[in-house]
Length: 329
Image (cartoon, rainbow, N blue to C red; front, side):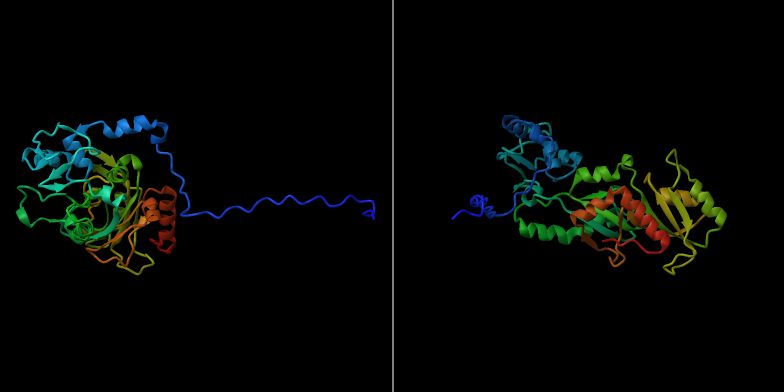
């Protein structure tokens, strides 16, 4: 019995089923320059020594200068022996470093990740790591980082015997300015955001003593000399008809330079008396309206990215102008 002139069906080639993945999905590593090194070079790079003061600063114990003071005071031991010279060479990978008898591995080594916070800074707090010595208020200085005491306590509980990582304020707000302040354990990101070359726009709402005239708003927009350099704000406009229904004596000011007291100087130059000054936005990240004064919240990774996102910053600005206040998160 022929098959009607057709050849019998060839057996079908069925590929074997794809084996199911066992365990977690493999995450692709991002190239960071170290991949170009040979294993031997990587080991050498880890083991090559650095100054003890630099190692302590890198491990988050104190600033480089602060670390030198701790070393001079004889509070640091390396492999059990007291070392009083900041230029003593150590390898954080191999040497056991301790401050006041407590092992240091920088906090970050235990956590593996950096922490990023957004704080609604209250009036009367200094953006400094230590109270001003010889300042008029002496020991009464309130520091922004004091507001993170509960974070440090929780950290110590989780990692007993270790020092919590050092916190940095990203840029500064003067003592009488309130509002959005970024705080992080990531020193490199902090410098990147705070450096003028990043050209990150910071938005402020200035409440004047009385309603500024159109001429005063125009004069503010022209800028002035601050610290010997002419600065011109990105944008200045009256909030007289703002859609949030707030007071008419407010002015919205966007600046890039971020010089000390820049917004106050621009206002003073135009004859505008400042009653209150509040920062509401940094880059593409806006402070959530529900965050109470003196409280902070942890940023998620995508929110950290918003800060340096120029396109998003422009969208935020457009939203503010059309009255749809930017969704902060």
